[in-house]
Image (cartoon, rainbow, N blue to C red; front, top):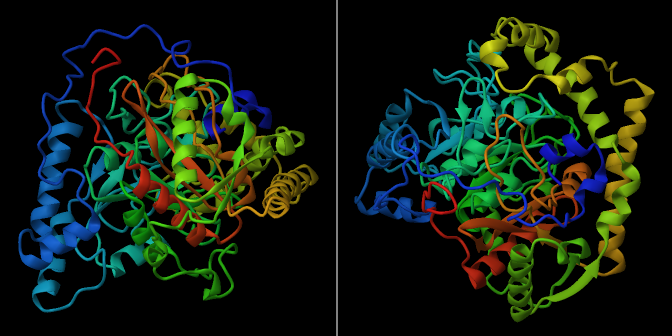
Length: 540
C-alpha cells in the first residue's frame, strides 16, 4: 500500500490485495478529444538511450552535452507542453544549456568528471536547487521560494557534472495535503498524465519524474519517497525506481514529510542507470541525523553489483497476498516467478502483511507529527513569505479558488493539531512502525534464509479523477520497506491493456547492492520495459 491509499484507509490492512479487478475500477473510457491527442508516431532520436550510450556518443563526437540537452528541451516542448501534453515538467532550468556548455568545455580540455558528465537530469520540485527555479512542492504558497542553495544531493550531482534540466511536477506537498487528493496534481503545476494511456494517473507523489523518465524527456531523474512515492510512479510508468535505506541519501534541502521515512531515490529506464545515479547521490551528510556514521555502509559504485546471473542460488520470499485478486496482475506475477526460478532462484511463500496488521494507523500518526515539525523547520529559514505550516494553510484558505479548487487540506489540519515530537503518542507510534516492521522483515528473512522479499509493486494505474480523488487500485507493497526505512527496488514486470506494473525486491538496511543484483538479473532475463504509446484511453 502506498500513501495515497493509506490516507484513505487509515490502516495497514489496506496493504492486502483487494478482490477488485481493473475492469471493476475503470470508468467507461472517454472518446479521444482534441485536448489530449495521442502521439501519431514517436521517432525521437534519443528514445530509450542509456547513460552509458550518451557517454559514448559524447566521447566519439556524435553529440555534445549541449546538443543532447537541446534535444531533450525540444522533446519537452513537443510532447510535454504540446501534443499529448504530459505536463510532467513544472519548470525548466534557464541555465541548463550553459551548464551543458561548461561540461563540453571541460570535456574538450580532457576533464571527465565521471559517468554523469554532461548528462541531463530532471528533479522533483521539492528538492532545493540554487538555479533560477523555485522549490515549491507544487504549492502556490511556495511560488516565491528561490532558495539560492543546493540540497546536499544536488551538490553531489553537480560535482558529478550532471546538467540540471529542470523540475518535475508532483502531487502537491508530496501527497500530504488532502485525503481526497488526485495523485500527480498540484496547484502550481496542474495534472500530470501517464504516458502509456493519457487519461491514467501516473501515481504519486513523484508523478512528474516517473512520467518524464518513461516518456524520454530526460536520461534519468530523481524522485522522493515517504511511502511509495518513488516505487509506485516507477511501477505504473514502466521504469526502475530505487527507494534506498533511509539516510543513505541526505535529506538536507528537501521539503520534508517524515524524518524517519523520507528519502530521495533514482528513477531510470534501466537498473544500470539507476545504479549509476545511486552511487553518485549516496554520501554522509553531517546535517542528517540518519546518515551512516562511516563509509562502510556506502558503495561509491553500485554498478559493480550488476550480475546477469545474480539470481542463481538465491532464496526469495513471495508475499502470499499477491496471489489473489486482479487476474491480469496474477498472470504477470506467475510469469515473473517462472523467470526468477529459471535463473536459479528458489521461491518461498511468506506472510509479511499479516505480521504488520497490529500497527494499524500508527504510520499516519508518525507522519502527522513529523510533517508539522519538519516543515516548520524548513520554512523558518526559507526565502518564501510563508514561514510555517500555519502560514501555508492560511495562504491556501485565502487563495482557495486557485490553491484548493478540487480538494481541501484535511491532512494539514490534522498535522497542525498535533503537539511536538516529545508527545507520548508520537514516541509510541514511532516505536511501533519502525520497530515492529523491522523485526517482522528481519525475522521472516532470517527464518527462511531469504535474500529478499518480492511482490508486485502495486496495481495498474487508475484513471485521473480530480473530483473524487484516487481510488484503490487493488494492491500495493511499498509500506513494509517504507516504515522499516529499508531499501526497495522496482523493475518492470510487464503490461496488461498497455498499462505496466513493476516487481518489487526489498531487503534489510543497506542491502542496496543485494537487491540491485537481483533486480538486474531479473531485468536482463525478462526485458519487460516497453516504450510508452501515448494512447488517449484504453480504446486507443
